Length: 191
Image (cartoon, rainbow, N blue to C red; front, top):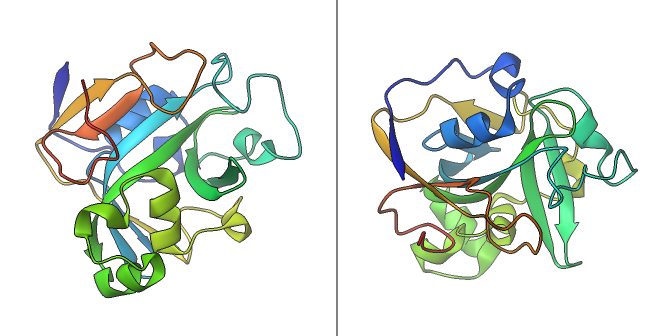
């Protein structure tokens, strides 16, 4: 299944104060910079409070408290004790996991942080993305509209594809993973 995104709502707090599935789809093609380093968001996943795969499914905890805060904030958590993951908070208990970007700005900085030369491997996956952008727990709760974050308008007329989320064991059939069709920077192919 694919959709053509022709226009992009203004990127403001109201953009994020909506259903996470809609936000996840519309974040494809948006420019994300952290301290001037980053690129185009090309892969996302949506998580909602009624979703058994979501951190918020069982209610608010110290770990997921940011998911219940204001929309347009960064929710950063450690996955499997190894990798940081960056999410954009939407409605209370909802967030969008940023899975991959196409590196555009500060590519040499990303290569140094990741110790790789392959453009495809710089930020293709949530852990790689956070390492490339130097995102860690200190960013949890930060506004995506204030330094060091910068969100730019989406590229127009992108073909967005969707499919099941990856790396989870619950609600695996929800088609809440979105990506830029044909991008070599996706973390995994869409089936």
